[in-house]
Amino acid sequence: MKTLTKLILSLLVCICFIACNNSVKSSDQNSKNSPSEELSNEKTGQAFIEDEGGTPNALQLAMQSEDHTTLVAAVQAAGVENALVNVGPLTVFAPNNAAFAKIDETTLNDLLKPENKGQLALILTNHVAPSNFPVDMLKKNAAKNRKLYMASGEYVTVTEKDGDIFVGGTKVIATVNVSNGWVHVVEDVILPKN
Image (cartoon, helix red, strand yellow):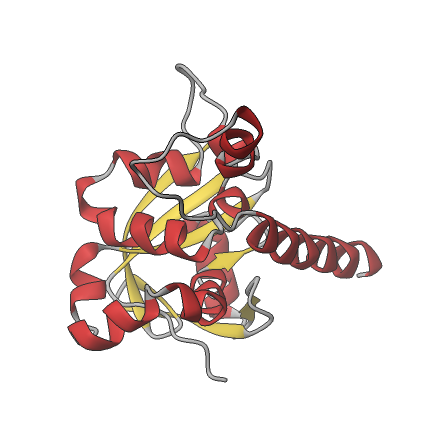
């Protein structure tokens, strides 16, 4: 139990650290930057290391998917890219574009603004469980009425109905094993309760 608590605390600290360190200063496109300015504008961390071949991690999978362009844009706007490439294991519940389309356009555009970066990061980390949850494990958790702890600090319920798995009230419609855990595609955005 202490190990799990330490792991969760470490993941939350990493997410906060990564989110704070990934802010990028905007610069004038027409002016030339000095070498030191160019270095300060580069994004750093595991998410920006080029990996050729091999099994993709959760972020790489989302970036390769035409159905997850809104999720990728939100992850980039929140600056939490590195949270999705950590060694893991992680379980990411990835809302597809249709899930984000259910949110009214004004609210979605507002969340993508730089001043709402913290709120967006909270919503996105509410889709990441810092543990390994393949489908069979989700089914076991549903049968035992267990909740999943999310990187946002909140818990979401797992239920099974007619053979389908629901996490946080949204249906899991596809599952992919990635290099750092599992990605479960979901039909809705899982909003934090707070």
